[in-house]
Length: 393
Image (cartoon, rainbow, N blue to C red):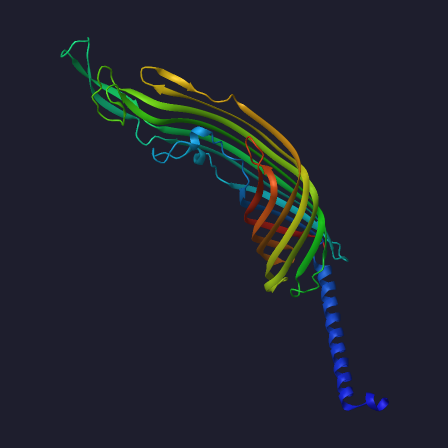
């Protein structure tokens, strides 16, 4: 048996194994020493402050009663009031976090807050024809005999138009409390980190919107000999030409909210790209997050539409619409949440500047409906920037 073990081939294998073991041991000692040195030098506490400019989705539905959907606004040279209710969908805000990592541990304890808000007002008035002055040469008969007659010029002011005033406000706040562990072990290079964490996330969204619409549709003039015609000059007959149109007024308000709390998981990683920590380096950062939020979804809306026809000779008649409709809904919901970010950091031993792009999606968080419930996803996505300072050794 000793002869088999002492063959040249086995001796070569033994030497290779011994050499590899020695190299591995040397590298391990070097990495451990480097890690210990880094642990001694790295700050214990990081404080981060920043801001974001994000686009968001999940606003409430627009108010669209029948007079909006049945009239051909484009043919009249107007924009539909349903479209002019649309507001800008950008929010801005700030964020901050604090994290603590003991000098002799890979565990990281952190708390973070993100806040954003949006407010806007919009007024759209469209009246492509005017007001237009229609000069009509009108014949009328003072009595019932012919051919005695007189003539005069009748001036009529009229035009289709739409006037929409909209205001909206939106705010959101997201709180995170996390406990994580750095499990990177240098897998992305010396100085890299890979922290897997678990904790609790709280999110709250609030929004309000109000709209007032005044519109005039289907303007025509009436000739008592020939009936309704397009605007222009006509032979008017016994009476001067009269105007026919439909006028509408819409008032609407909506308030929506969601607040929820639940468990969350995160993975945040960073890898050196160029430079070194002592003289300054650039790192590539990325991360993903997931949570399940349990909370309450609320919606309160009210709206009222009124309108009337203006008809020649017979004055006007009211268009039948129901009285003001008020809807209030509240529901317990479970909201899945996923998100992620990617960016670059310019880092020194105790300071860091970060730039990146982030997205966060809360599925079915908002009741966007007016008269009936409709789930909508509240999403935030856009660029962010932050400055971090390290404290303690």
